Length: 140
Image (cartoon, rainbow, N blue to C red; front, top):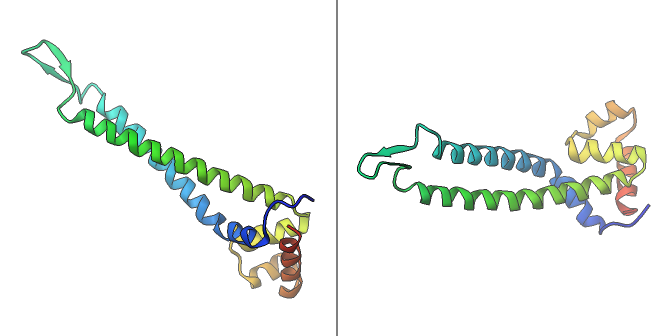
């Protein structure tokens, strides 16, 4: 097993994992929404015909809206990249643990199971499960 990070940082990342998964889903949905808004700006129903010039054009202010959407999209893409990186590093860290340690850490931190739920699932006492989790984290 390779030492990857400080155990305190590992616990923080384990604890943050469910929130990061939620943020990833939120950002993906936000990006989808932004992309739809960009498509809508240039849909045939949004384009108007200017009878004086004889050209089709989008309503005034479309460029400002598009710039705002692109800026928002760039920020979301950058944040998604950071979130994905943290998720990947945390998953690598968990997969570096032994099989039972992985199961206990995933159940406790990723699934946020209670000690009682874990005792029933693994047929082990809270003390035994806690011992393996602490041992895993100390070994990081």
